[in-house]
Length: 351
Image 1 (cartoon, rainbow, N blue to C red):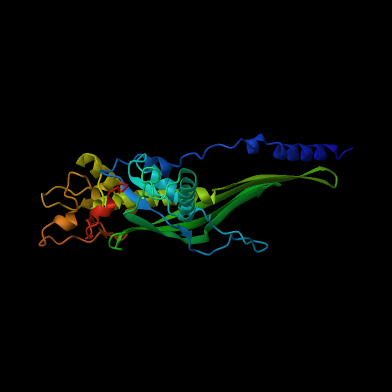
Image 2 (cartoon, rainbow, N blue to C red):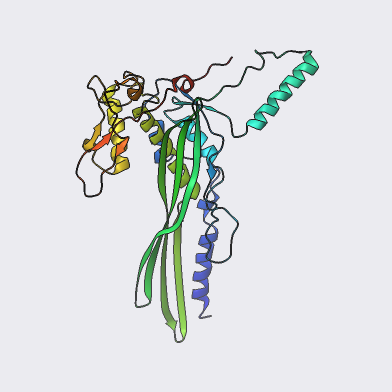
């Protein structure tokens, strides 16, 4: 009978773990991440860009790490294309891109073929009815790239202490996922802009235990703990959303598209982005000057492309001059020279 207290405590602890109703919550919509909110808050574009994504694949080829047996599960999700499409739609509250379906283009074409076949069989149509089945939209820009890196245990650590049989410990592990995104002109095949984003994935474990002699030769052992693992999909989603955000801002500075807002507001957006990207103060970001002497901040009131319309005597500065950790000079952000792609960058019209 003297063992009943220990048995009761063990049953109580196991019951709490099993009957924790927090793990029984009903399914709910995915909540927006901080990167999602930031992406949705982008100012609107001067004109929506028709864009397509064929495949945004896992290029790492890595399997999920395991301390025991080998697993065939991939380290990252294979649905990154769907995450990228969703991020493009959410940019500026759907005021930036017209996203065209290309990942499952074969399904779309088969369904359109079924429509033509049924209208021919039941309505007697021998020619294509353009009103019933208008032409598909075409994209002016293709987004290419993928998940190019997944590094496990990039940072590990922990701490613990014990006194008179009572102690606790904590452990920390960090992985890193890297995505690469580039915009390609359909008209010329030129790579218009590229961006790479890295996101850390944290895991934290907390444990506490105690050893006590409750009677002669009777040792009571208590142990509890909890582990928090940041979901890999959530971390990848934030990395992709940050990449889309950066592509929009850098593309505006390079003259690929523009912000439909006033210059002071756009300047705040551009300065904030480059200051955060390069981990410097926003005042140290020196923007390129337009031919009229104003800062080039990617607004639609500026010339369509500084690099295209500027006099040839004006030599564009490098895209970004990043400082070394010991440097104190300004960061120069200037538009890069790009070829004319404005026809395909605009939203295409059916027919």
